[in-house]
Image 1 (tube, rainbow, N blue to C red):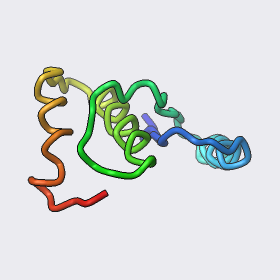
Image 2: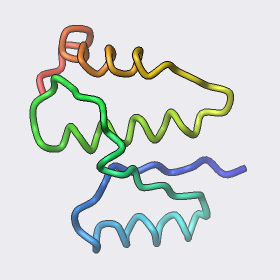
Image 3: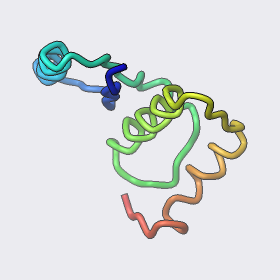
Image 4: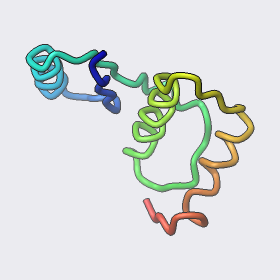
Length: 88
């Protein structure tokens, strides 16, 4: 099976079309993370971080046999800066 392509939410339909065209050409399944999928807060700053979190959560859905508790996701997203030195 082809490896899926998972993309953070896109504001520009032209950018989204590039992803769609490329995925069709490969071919590979394409999934756009829903902006509202990032229902968990994150301590990273910047408006793009909500989309990044949504993409990460979408990726988790596509890992066969992988499950993770919502509490672990919530804690992990709130500890990103401390654990990885990320600043936004």
